[in-house]
Length: 197
Ligand SMILES: [Zn+2]
Image (cartoon, rainbow, N blue to C red):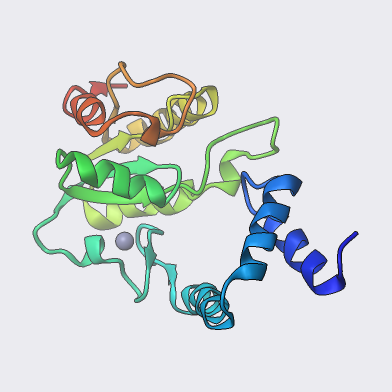
């Protein structure tokens, strides 16, 4: 439909989450107008990020070294782990200032419709951490969605026999959305008021 280089960019942009054909075209035409130098900086930032950022070997947070800054922080309480679906949820929980333990990024939630089962998520790695790190409590902070709740129940069944306390964020979070749909205060309260599963 468009000249080849432009069409190529539109196709690449359209593959990003939440960006449809129309938005991809709008972005591409905007990028067509920026200075070549600015375009270079943007392209370089993407390549550089991809090259340098990796996953933390312990919690699967994004990091530029073997372990992320949270896992390396000696002031954090290593006996409590907060399980979240995506690495970006860490920022959301950190903002509440109500949690001082470590994290574990599952990499999604159980979803039969999307063909995601427990074996596609980092549950085995979590179980290994329980013993290796002497974890006493796992706070399940998956999204307040059907998939998030299913995952939480599955985790509770898996972890309780290991003698670990499993808790879930208190209700009161906006149902059906991601964690970051809730404001910091609400999420902070849900953390403090977490309940035994
Ligand atoms: Zn980490």
